[in-house]
Length: 313
Image 1 (tube, rainbow, N blue to C red):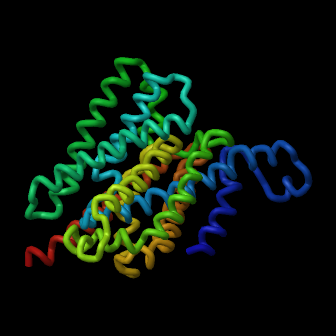
Image 2: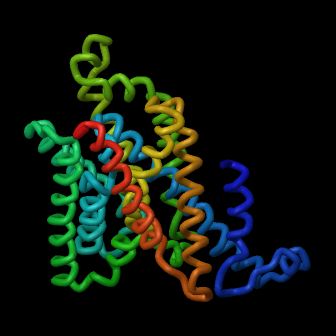
Image 3: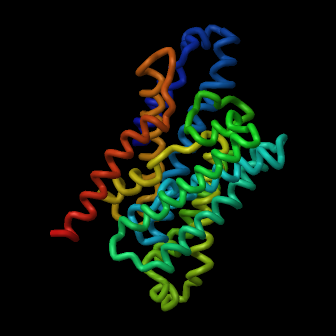
């Protein structure tokens, strides 16, 4: 996967409405070099960080919540992160990306804990009901966000957080996604603690692990990953759902054992979706969330059928 990312990533640098060639850059074409450094390279880095961040966020949430259908898109985390972007636009019109990320992080972690509260207080017999609650909550928050965006006339500014798209990524407007790197290191460092908490509260306490602290820490990492990506790129549906589940079929559920594979596969998946979106109606392009959403919807239905069919037989 790493080799595929390197090859496809290099090829993606030369795909776009404006012609950029390696020969011209080597010959000293400053205009094409500027396009490469200001637009194409930042876009590639944002794609890779987005794929890694959303996939790892989904992996953490699925293990901590003990439900393979939970992800940032099915637990209302993305919807609350978008609400945070709206609040930043209304209250702090000149807020920087880092300030928007901070506000979005606060709302996303609040939304995640609201979702956790509902799932813990209501005993569901069917595991599919848990993400359905998250989807319904996310739709309610999404409707509220859209309403107030129209009321305060910031719908156009909010559009970037509603639709996952890399076409507007340029140098100076994407660097906040680099938060993925230290958060990935922290996730790997505490992977064993997250695995223990994923086995249940009583099991964690018997092993001397502070269940609530580790749970809050893991969900906070997932929320911060989601917030940094939503603020920069927008929402990409199902990415955090399908990638960890596909990798788990081959590598198992141990976070430390599959974290690297989830990261690489997530980055490769987003990169392929972005390249397809740029080529299918060239020189125009489709938002990456559209392609990922179509693939994710099919994968979600297949996953749901696979997970539920043994229980019904």
